[in-house]
Image (cartoon, rainbow, N blue to C red; front, side, top):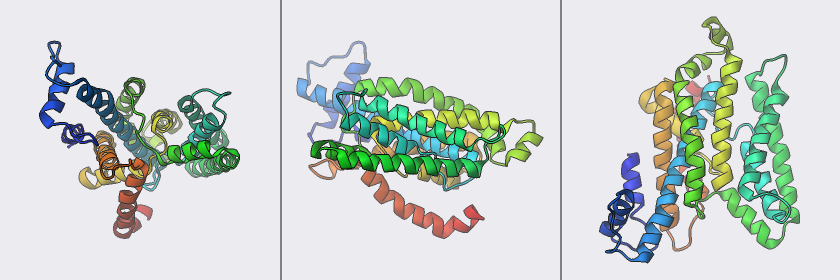
Amino acid sequence: MLFIAVGVAITFGAYSISILDVYRIVLAHLSPFGDLSSVTKLHNTIVWELRIPRVLLAVTVGTALATAGAVFQGCFRNPLVEPYILGISSGAAFGAAMGIVFSDFLLSIQLSAFIFGSLAVAMAYFLARVRKETPIVTLILAGVIIGSIFSAMVSILKYIATDAALREIVFWLMGGFYYATWSDVHLLVPIIIPSFLIMWALGWKLNILSMGDDEARALGVNPEKYKFILITLATLVTSLAVSTVGIIAWVGLMMPHATRMMLGPDHRYVIPASAMLGGSYLLVCDTMARTLTSAEIPVGIITSILGAPYLFYLLRTRGKAMLG
């Protein structure tokens, strides 16, 4: 399904290009003997410099968010947890807003968002740590507190921002792949893919952690050590994704649920399947966002519109089992 979604997505766009030309361009770039003489320079630029990086970035970000969601839900033993539970989104939003409002004094928007998103999770983690342990409930409450503080500071920045800066902040908060480039792909893929592979390799440890700390210790697994490793990796990929494309909701919450419905609760299968499903879902949403109307729709709106009914269905049909 993921490969089909990629193959279809690169043929859709505001500018009409024949399917044959699209694949001729792709094969020409991938083959050492490629020949671009039969296609126009404009078509080559649209397909290779605009569509392909955007498609790859959507798949990478979807993989990151869905994998992080599966890891957080397993670590916290709560199926309603999402990657933003520890304040990553609020911290990244504050960093991005700082970069937009004070663009002459600070680093790039992306770097600022990444730093503050990671800082928010670090603050929540150390705020919740008591006697060398990090209780799950305390950690979630700490994340809510830190997220609220950063959200309040984002509101302050909105209040003092100029009209142009305010508009840019709002668009960033809605998420989107408007400015996807090869440099973004080259930055995210070498970090997110190895992080995903490590989390996948620790899937059997996550199975033990999801049973509870006491059961994990009884089975010889140090819960604090592996929770720290998994939460750190999940935070890293989420912060990178959010800092690059803004806040995209529901992917990290929905995809692990959908995967568990199909394959069961074993994280050795949930993590890779969630990654592929998340990449496919976000790619479909982004393709809809850029093709439904002449003006591009922020992809965060599409994921929320499709995600809210799904969560309602989930709560109505499986809520008692999940919460009880």
